[in-house]
Amino acid sequence: MGSFMTEQHGPSNKPTHILRQLGTSNLHISPIGLGCWQFSKGNGLVGKYWPALSNQTIVDIVQTSLQHGVNWFDTAEIYGKGESEKALARTLQQLNVPPSDAIIATKWWPVARTAGSIRDTIMQRLECLQPYPISIYQIHQPYALSSIRAQLEAMKDLITAGHIKYAGVSNFSAKQMEEAHQVLQQYGLSLISNQVKYSMIDRRIEKNGILDTAKRLDMAIIAYSPLEQGILTGKFHSQSKSDVGRELNRAKAQATSVAPSGIRRWLPGFRQARLIKTWPLIEELQRLALEYEVEPGQVALNWLIHYHGHYVFAIPGASRSSQAAANAKVLTFHLSDSEKEHLNQLSMQVTL
Image 1 (cartoon, rainbow, N blue to C red):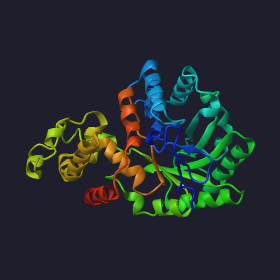
Image 2 (image 1 turned 45 degrees about the vertical axis):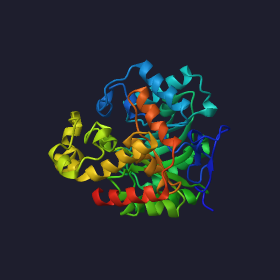
Image 3 (image 1 turned 90 degrees about the vertical axis):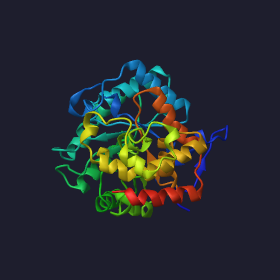
Protein backbone atom coordinates (compact mmCIF):
# COMPACT_ATOMS: atom_id res chain seq x y z
CA MET A 1 0.00 0.00 0.00
CA GLY A 2 1.43 3.38 -1.03
CA SER A 3 1.73 6.35 1.25
CA PHE A 4 -1.32 8.03 -0.29
CA MET A 5 -3.86 5.36 0.57
CA THR A 6 -4.99 6.74 3.93
CA GLU A 7 -7.04 9.80 4.77
CA GLN A 8 -7.22 10.90 8.38
CA HIS A 9 -10.18 12.72 9.87
CA GLY A 10 -10.22 14.98 12.90
CA PRO A 11 -12.25 14.34 16.05
CA SER A 12 -15.47 15.65 14.49
CA ASN A 13 -15.08 13.20 11.59
CA LYS A 14 -16.13 15.95 9.16
CA PRO A 15 -14.60 16.24 5.69
CA THR A 16 -13.17 19.65 6.64
CA HIS A 17 -10.64 17.80 8.83
CA ILE A 18 -9.30 15.53 6.11
CA LEU A 19 -5.54 15.17 6.23
CA ARG A 20 -3.36 13.28 3.77
CA GLN A 21 0.18 12.04 3.98
CA LEU A 22 2.39 14.13 1.72
CA GLY A 23 4.52 11.78 -0.35
CA THR A 24 6.76 9.60 1.79
CA SER A 25 7.08 12.28 4.48
CA ASN A 26 5.52 12.17 7.93
CA LEU A 27 3.58 15.35 7.15
CA HIS A 28 -0.20 15.07 7.12
CA ILE A 29 -1.76 18.04 5.41
CA SER A 30 -5.12 19.14 4.06
CA PRO A 31 -5.59 18.46 0.32
CA ILE A 32 -6.11 22.21 -0.06
CA GLY A 33 -3.36 24.54 1.12
CA LEU A 34 -3.17 28.32 0.94
CA GLY A 35 -0.97 29.88 -1.73
CA CYS A 36 0.60 33.04 -0.28
CA TRP A 37 2.06 34.85 -3.30
CA GLN A 38 -0.54 37.58 -2.74
CA PHE A 39 1.06 38.40 0.65
CA SER A 40 4.02 40.02 -1.16
CA LYS A 41 2.99 43.55 -0.15
CA GLY A 42 3.60 44.73 -3.70
CA ASN A 43 7.36 44.38 -3.15
CA GLY A 44 9.68 43.46 -6.01
CA LEU A 45 8.82 42.72 -9.62
CA VAL A 46 7.08 39.42 -8.82
CA GLY A 47 5.31 40.91 -5.80
CA LYS A 48 3.73 43.63 -7.93
CA TYR A 49 1.59 41.02 -9.67
CA TRP A 50 -0.88 41.41 -6.76
CA PRO A 51 -2.15 44.57 -5.03
CA ALA A 52 -0.69 45.08 -1.57
CA LEU A 53 -2.99 43.58 1.05
CA SER A 54 -3.42 45.16 4.46
CA ASN A 55 -2.10 43.34 7.52
CA GLN A 56 -5.66 42.85 8.77
CA THR A 57 -6.76 41.34 5.46
CA ILE A 58 -3.88 38.85 5.65
CA VAL A 59 -4.84 37.98 9.23
CA ASP A 60 -8.45 37.41 8.16
CA ILE A 61 -7.39 35.16 5.26
CA VAL A 62 -5.06 33.01 7.35
CA GLN A 63 -7.47 32.80 10.28
CA THR A 64 -10.34 31.78 8.02
CA SER A 65 -8.19 29.14 6.35
CA LEU A 66 -7.16 27.63 9.69
CA GLN A 67 -10.72 27.70 11.02
CA HIS A 68 -11.95 25.78 7.99
CA GLY A 69 -9.42 22.95 8.10
CA VAL A 70 -6.55 24.24 5.93
CA ASN A 71 -3.35 23.49 7.85
CA TRP A 72 -0.47 24.46 5.55
CA PHE A 73 0.83 27.42 3.58
CA ASP A 74 2.95 27.78 0.46
CA THR A 75 5.19 30.80 -0.02
CA ALA A 76 8.56 31.60 -1.62
CA GLU A 77 11.67 33.76 -1.41
CA ILE A 78 10.77 35.48 -4.68
CA TYR A 79 7.31 36.50 -3.45
CA GLY A 80 8.05 40.09 -2.52
CA LYS A 81 11.72 39.33 -1.76
CA GLY A 82 10.72 37.60 1.47
CA GLU A 83 7.76 39.86 2.29
CA SER A 84 5.26 37.04 1.83
CA GLU A 85 7.22 34.85 4.24
CA LYS A 86 7.43 37.65 6.79
CA ALA A 87 3.73 38.49 6.51
CA LEU A 88 2.78 34.83 6.94
CA ALA A 89 5.00 34.37 10.01
CA ARG A 90 3.79 37.63 11.56
CA THR A 91 0.19 36.58 11.05
CA LEU A 92 0.65 33.10 12.50
CA GLN A 93 2.23 34.66 15.57
CA GLN A 94 -0.64 37.12 15.94
CA LEU A 95 -3.06 34.18 15.77
CA ASN A 96 -1.04 32.35 18.46
CA VAL A 97 -0.24 29.39 16.23
CA PRO A 98 2.58 27.39 17.90
CA PRO A 99 5.63 26.72 15.71
CA SER A 100 5.05 23.00 16.19
CA ASP A 101 1.63 23.34 14.52
CA ALA A 102 2.72 25.39 11.51
CA ILE A 103 3.35 23.58 8.23
CA ILE A 104 5.07 25.94 5.82
CA ALA A 105 6.41 25.26 2.37
CA THR A 106 8.73 27.86 0.87
CA LYS A 107 11.07 27.98 -2.11
CA TRP A 108 14.63 28.90 -3.06
CA TRP A 109 14.95 31.02 -6.22
CA PRO A 110 17.62 29.41 -8.46
CA VAL A 111 17.88 31.72 -11.48
CA ALA A 112 21.49 32.96 -11.97
CA ARG A 113 22.54 31.18 -8.76
CA THR A 114 24.60 28.13 -7.91
CA ALA A 115 23.84 25.35 -5.46
CA GLY A 116 25.99 27.11 -2.89
CA SER A 117 23.26 29.73 -2.61
CA ILE A 118 20.93 27.10 -1.15
CA ARG A 119 23.23 26.79 1.85
CA ASP A 120 24.20 30.48 1.95
CA THR A 121 20.64 31.85 2.01
CA ILE A 122 18.84 29.37 4.27
CA MET A 123 19.34 31.57 7.34
CA GLN A 124 17.61 34.41 5.51
CA ARG A 125 14.62 32.18 4.87
CA LEU A 126 14.51 31.04 8.49
CA GLU A 127 14.82 34.64 9.67
CA CYS A 128 11.91 35.73 7.48
CA LEU A 129 9.77 32.89 8.81
CA GLN A 130 10.91 32.94 12.44
CA PRO A 131 9.91 31.37 14.75
CA TYR A 132 8.35 28.92 12.31
CA PRO A 133 10.26 26.01 10.78
CA ILE A 134 10.47 25.14 7.09
CA SER A 135 8.60 21.89 6.60
CA ILE A 136 9.11 21.73 2.83
CA TYR A 137 11.89 23.56 0.99
CA GLN A 138 11.48 23.58 -2.77
CA ILE A 139 13.72 24.47 -5.69
CA HIS A 140 11.47 26.96 -7.47
CA GLN A 141 12.64 26.40 -11.06
CA PRO A 142 15.03 24.02 -12.87
CA TYR A 143 17.23 26.91 -14.05
CA ALA A 144 20.12 27.11 -11.61
CA LEU A 145 23.74 27.47 -12.72
CA SER A 146 24.59 24.22 -10.91
CA SER A 147 23.56 20.67 -11.74
CA ILE A 148 20.50 19.02 -10.22
CA ARG A 149 22.85 16.74 -8.33
CA ALA A 150 24.66 19.68 -6.73
CA GLN A 151 21.37 21.34 -5.80
CA LEU A 152 19.90 18.24 -4.19
CA GLU A 153 23.12 17.54 -2.32
CA ALA A 154 22.80 21.04 -0.89
CA MET A 155 19.22 20.25 0.09
CA LYS A 156 20.47 17.09 1.76
CA ASP A 157 22.89 19.16 3.80
CA LEU A 158 20.03 21.40 4.98
CA ILE A 159 18.00 18.37 6.05
CA THR A 160 20.99 16.86 7.86
CA ALA A 161 21.65 20.16 9.64
CA GLY A 162 18.00 20.36 10.73
CA HIS A 163 17.31 23.59 8.83
CA ILE A 164 14.48 22.01 6.82
CA LYS A 165 12.42 18.86 7.18
CA TYR A 166 11.91 17.80 3.57
CA ALA A 167 12.96 18.74 0.05
CA GLY A 168 10.69 19.33 -2.92
CA VAL A 169 10.96 20.87 -6.37
CA SER A 170 8.79 23.03 -8.59
CA ASN A 171 8.34 23.10 -12.36
CA PHE A 172 10.67 20.11 -12.82
CA SER A 173 10.16 17.78 -15.78
CA ALA A 174 9.63 14.07 -15.26
CA LYS A 175 13.29 13.40 -16.03
CA GLN A 176 14.49 16.17 -13.71
CA MET A 177 12.29 15.10 -10.80
CA GLU A 178 13.48 11.51 -11.17
CA GLU A 179 17.12 12.64 -11.15
CA ALA A 180 16.50 14.78 -8.07
CA HIS A 181 14.81 11.85 -6.33
CA GLN A 182 17.70 9.52 -7.14
CA VAL A 183 20.25 11.92 -5.63
CA LEU A 184 18.36 12.05 -2.34
CA GLN A 185 17.82 8.29 -2.35
CA GLN A 186 21.58 7.82 -2.19
CA TYR A 187 21.46 9.47 1.23
CA GLY A 188 18.39 7.59 2.46
CA LEU A 189 16.09 10.52 1.71
CA SER A 190 13.22 11.10 -0.73
CA LEU A 191 11.97 13.94 -2.86
CA ILE A 192 8.44 14.42 -1.58
CA SER A 193 6.80 16.77 -4.07
CA ASN A 194 6.84 18.58 -7.41
CA GLN A 195 4.85 21.82 -7.57
CA VAL A 196 3.53 22.36 -11.09
CA LYS A 197 0.78 24.13 -12.98
CA TYR A 198 -2.24 21.83 -13.15
CA SER A 199 -5.97 22.37 -13.59
CA MET A 200 -8.98 20.98 -15.42
CA ILE A 201 -8.01 22.94 -18.51
CA ASP A 202 -4.25 22.46 -18.24
CA ARG A 203 -3.52 18.76 -17.93
CA ARG A 204 -0.11 18.67 -19.56
CA ILE A 205 1.43 16.83 -16.60
CA GLU A 206 -0.73 13.83 -17.52
CA LYS A 207 0.83 13.76 -20.99
CA ASN A 208 4.47 14.59 -20.35
CA GLY A 209 5.19 11.94 -17.71
CA ILE A 210 5.22 14.18 -14.63
CA LEU A 211 2.11 12.70 -13.01
CA ASP A 212 3.07 9.11 -13.89
CA THR A 213 6.53 9.66 -12.42
CA ALA A 214 5.05 11.12 -9.24
CA LYS A 215 2.81 8.09 -8.82
CA ARG A 216 5.63 5.65 -9.46
CA LEU A 217 7.93 7.38 -6.96
CA ASP A 218 5.15 7.87 -4.39
CA MET A 219 5.58 11.63 -4.67
CA ALA A 220 3.01 14.40 -4.31
CA ILE A 221 1.91 16.82 -7.00
CA ILE A 222 1.21 20.31 -5.65
CA ALA A 223 -0.97 22.10 -8.19
CA TYR A 224 -0.62 25.84 -8.57
CA SER A 225 -3.03 27.99 -10.58
CA PRO A 226 -5.68 25.28 -10.06
CA LEU A 227 -8.50 27.66 -11.01
CA GLU A 228 -6.67 29.11 -14.02
CA GLN A 229 -6.71 32.71 -12.78
CA GLY A 230 -10.46 32.43 -12.12
CA ILE A 231 -11.57 30.92 -15.44
CA LEU A 232 -12.88 27.79 -13.72
CA THR A 233 -15.04 29.84 -11.35
CA GLY A 234 -17.27 30.59 -14.31
CA LYS A 235 -17.37 34.32 -13.61
CA PHE A 236 -15.81 35.12 -16.97
CA HIS A 237 -18.42 32.97 -18.70
CA SER A 238 -21.52 33.81 -16.70
CA GLN A 239 -22.25 35.25 -13.29
CA SER A 240 -25.78 33.90 -13.02
CA LYS A 241 -26.64 30.39 -11.89
CA SER A 242 -29.89 30.78 -13.78
CA ASP A 243 -27.82 30.55 -16.98
CA VAL A 244 -26.92 26.90 -16.35
CA GLY A 245 -29.40 25.66 -18.92
CA ARG A 246 -28.38 28.17 -21.56
CA GLU A 247 -27.76 26.67 -24.97
CA LEU A 248 -24.29 26.70 -26.49
CA ASN A 249 -25.26 29.01 -29.36
CA ARG A 250 -26.32 31.60 -26.82
CA ALA A 251 -23.00 31.12 -25.04
CA LYS A 252 -21.25 31.98 -28.27
CA ALA A 253 -23.20 35.21 -28.47
CA GLN A 254 -22.30 36.20 -24.91
CA ALA A 255 -19.41 34.15 -23.53
CA THR A 256 -18.57 36.42 -20.63
CA SER A 257 -20.27 38.61 -18.09
CA VAL A 258 -17.08 39.82 -16.37
CA ALA A 259 -14.36 41.31 -18.55
CA PRO A 260 -10.82 40.15 -17.74
CA SER A 261 -8.54 42.91 -16.46
CA GLY A 262 -4.84 43.38 -15.82
CA ILE A 263 -2.57 40.62 -17.06
CA ARG A 264 -5.59 38.37 -17.65
CA ARG A 265 -6.40 40.36 -20.78
CA TRP A 266 -3.28 38.95 -22.42
CA LEU A 267 -3.57 35.32 -21.30
CA PRO A 268 -4.75 32.84 -23.97
CA GLY A 269 -7.40 31.30 -21.71
CA PHE A 270 -9.33 34.58 -21.55
CA ARG A 271 -9.66 35.08 -25.28
CA GLN A 272 -13.22 34.92 -26.56
CA ALA A 273 -12.67 31.82 -28.67
CA ARG A 274 -11.12 29.96 -25.72
CA LEU A 275 -13.93 30.95 -23.36
CA ILE A 276 -16.48 29.71 -25.89
CA LYS A 277 -14.62 26.41 -26.21
CA THR A 278 -14.51 25.86 -22.44
CA TRP A 279 -18.19 26.70 -21.96
CA PRO A 280 -19.47 23.07 -21.91
CA LEU A 281 -17.12 22.30 -19.00
CA ILE A 282 -18.14 25.46 -17.15
CA GLU A 283 -21.80 24.62 -17.71
CA GLU A 284 -21.34 21.22 -16.04
CA LEU A 285 -19.40 22.77 -13.18
CA GLN A 286 -22.30 25.16 -12.67
CA ARG A 287 -24.84 22.33 -12.75
CA LEU A 288 -22.95 20.31 -10.13
CA ALA A 289 -22.42 23.44 -8.05
CA LEU A 290 -26.18 23.86 -7.80
CA GLU A 291 -26.58 20.22 -6.80
CA TYR A 292 -23.95 20.39 -4.05
CA GLU A 293 -24.82 23.95 -2.99
CA VAL A 294 -21.30 25.17 -3.69
CA GLU A 295 -19.63 27.27 -6.40
CA PRO A 296 -18.32 26.08 -9.80
CA GLY A 297 -14.71 26.72 -8.80
CA GLN A 298 -15.16 24.54 -5.74
CA VAL A 299 -16.34 21.69 -7.95
CA ALA A 300 -13.28 22.14 -10.16
CA LEU A 301 -10.95 22.02 -7.16
CA ASN A 302 -12.76 19.01 -5.72
CA TRP A 303 -12.24 17.12 -8.97
CA LEU A 304 -8.56 18.09 -9.00
CA ILE A 305 -7.74 16.80 -5.52
CA HIS A 306 -9.73 13.57 -5.87
CA TYR A 307 -9.59 12.36 -9.47
CA HIS A 308 -6.10 10.87 -9.12
CA GLY A 309 -6.65 9.48 -5.66
CA HIS A 310 -4.37 10.99 -3.02
CA TYR A 311 -1.56 12.23 -5.23
CA VAL A 312 -2.70 15.78 -6.00
CA PHE A 313 -2.80 18.71 -3.58
CA ALA A 314 -3.83 22.24 -4.62
CA ILE A 315 -2.81 25.71 -3.44
CA PRO A 316 -5.39 28.28 -4.53
CA GLY A 317 -4.70 31.79 -3.32
CA ALA A 318 -7.09 34.21 -1.64
CA SER A 319 -7.11 38.00 -1.54
CA ARG A 320 -9.96 38.19 0.99
CA SER A 321 -11.31 35.96 3.74
CA SER A 322 -14.43 34.99 1.78
CA GLN A 323 -12.21 33.45 -0.91
CA ALA A 324 -10.28 31.54 1.74
CA ALA A 325 -13.56 30.16 3.10
CA ALA A 326 -14.64 29.22 -0.42
CA ASN A 327 -11.38 27.37 -1.03
CA ALA A 328 -11.74 25.42 2.19
CA LYS A 329 -15.34 24.47 1.39
CA VAL A 330 -13.87 22.14 -1.23
CA LEU A 331 -13.11 19.80 1.68
CA THR A 332 -16.77 19.47 2.67
CA PHE A 333 -18.15 17.36 -0.18
CA HIS A 334 -17.21 14.50 -2.49
CA LEU A 335 -18.17 14.10 -6.12
CA SER A 336 -19.35 10.65 -7.16
CA ASP A 337 -17.16 8.48 -9.38
CA SER A 338 -19.53 8.97 -12.31
CA GLU A 339 -19.53 12.76 -11.84
CA LYS A 340 -15.75 12.83 -11.72
CA GLU A 341 -15.52 10.76 -14.88
CA HIS A 342 -18.04 12.91 -16.73
CA LEU A 343 -16.05 16.00 -15.79
CA ASN A 344 -12.92 14.21 -16.91
CA GLN A 345 -14.38 13.63 -20.37
CA LEU A 346 -15.51 17.25 -20.71
CA SER A 347 -12.15 18.46 -19.46
CA MET A 348 -10.22 16.33 -21.95
CA GLN A 349 -12.08 18.06 -24.79
CA VAL A 350 -10.81 21.51 -23.79
CA THR A 351 -7.51 20.86 -22.03
CA LEU A 352 -4.10 22.00 -23.19
